[in-house]
Image: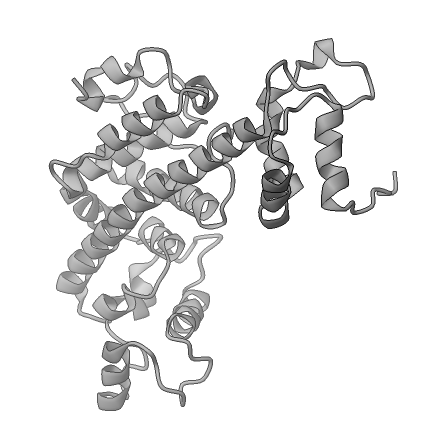
Length: 312
């Protein structure tokens, strides 16, 4: 079927919601948020405020539940933003810690430019070709420093210093590129290291099995990208899911919602940042926003009483 819908002016879009029973106390405020957030984006947060499909007439947009208001949609949207910021704060710490563990272990064992030698990587990896990886490192290094050409100055002082002082190798040492590469790149580096014992040594300070860490980095990168692109988290069913370890299986029955990623984040943060208050901040966010159904995020009833979270 050919797409036939046309763009509508903001007053008409708001009118569609009003006609379906949504309470709009301040029309100018609602139009303001539709103008700067968007009707389509906010529509995802309007869904839980609508009647079930069974009670809606076939082929007709579902009416809103009695008492539902535009403010309810906006509050849920704001909650989801706070949830993303909370996860991003944790992922930043985890990303820095993981890449530091990789750089420390590999640089001490094989020198500062170990990543430039293909011998350290799995030659049979389907999705990892060493020459393409080096091209990507070079590209990310230049992008991160605002330079498309090696003749242009880099914004980072330490990168400038390397290229002003050295001509060989053509890439800076691992501890310098660590400041410019993405979590996704570091995830691929770790996954494709050839020697299992080296992956184990990297995972050891994080008190995690190397196979688990490989999976978790993949899942964390997916979560990080969702947050960075401002995608909805609160009721999302995750496509890339973290493996459930033995220490999680007693309280974690599924792994496709925010709850499972929260457990992974808390697990790693306790090692990286002893005394972290991240779990308490998560609990506070949920209790301060009771309209955001915890079950939609995979949080079971009474989750805060689980010893793992150490909230009491």
